[in-house]
Length: 148
Image (tube, rainbow, N blue to C red):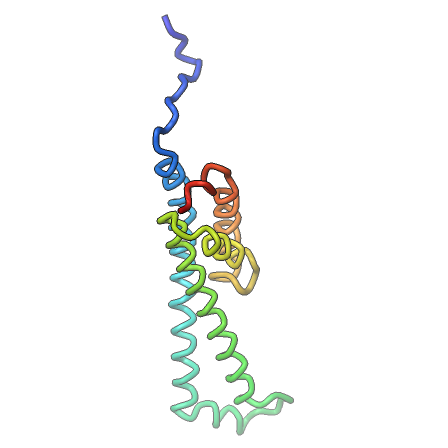
């Protein structure tokens, strides 16, 4: 009679790539979702900046501006930062896809590291736990060897 409280030994996975794929899929999907949200918000922000410029709202705000920095300079800085965040989100999405498919270890690690950096990663702080999770999974030896 077997002991129901003793864990049974599970047979080891025959295909190490399948095991690695099963381990990297959840953090890869999480990074994809968070970076896609960040990408969408970034694109909407740039559209809003262009709309403010085209409609003349920036010129009206400039006329009321009493501060030391011009509204045009603020718009340029905000737009440049938005473009940088969009580029980072694209790099993270590419790396997460590579992680999910096990075809680019360096891009996957780069995506995980970028998502951990506050205020640069996707959705500011939301990407940090998923990036840490991805780094932990990517640093497992059998996962590293499963990449082509």
